[in-house]
Image 1 (cartoon, rainbow, N blue to C red):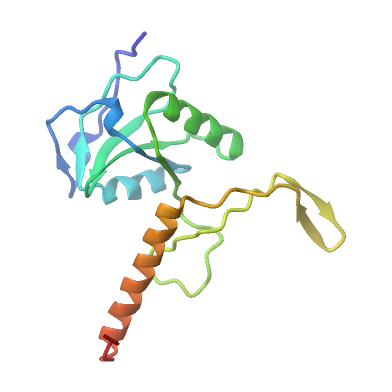
Image 2: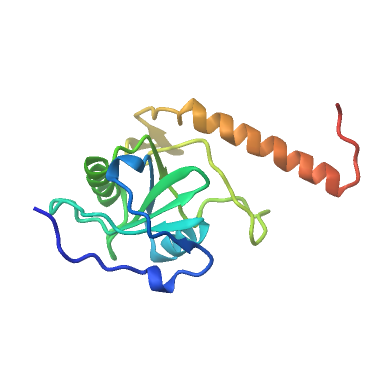
Length: 180
């Protein structure tokens, strides 16, 4: 059973092109989950194109924004109001995986734990994941009792490339000559 009502925010989009070309569920391989509406606003601003909505199974309670960044078709959802944490996030991810063939999943947020030397407009990319609800309190702190898998090598390689490009831009800004 399909839901008949899908609210569209496309009329309010600024900056992204609204595409009239319908796509299929199978074309969306990047999933992006936001915990807060402000994060969804930022995520939508990152899209190069906004795509029309697709039918969503009745069992999937997520609301989706579909679009693309470069050559990647992206599906974005935001957690329901008053529903943050690991359980709502896991539920949103599971429902997204049932509707779209996601290969890479992103949980992108405002970054409450980022360093203080970050300027407005900076993008902070974390490569370590710590699940703080699997552990126990010990004298002097917290001990994790589970090990998380590392992000896919493809993402880690892309992060390495971004770091190199950033350093090259910084060196050029300082007038330094880059090694050949």
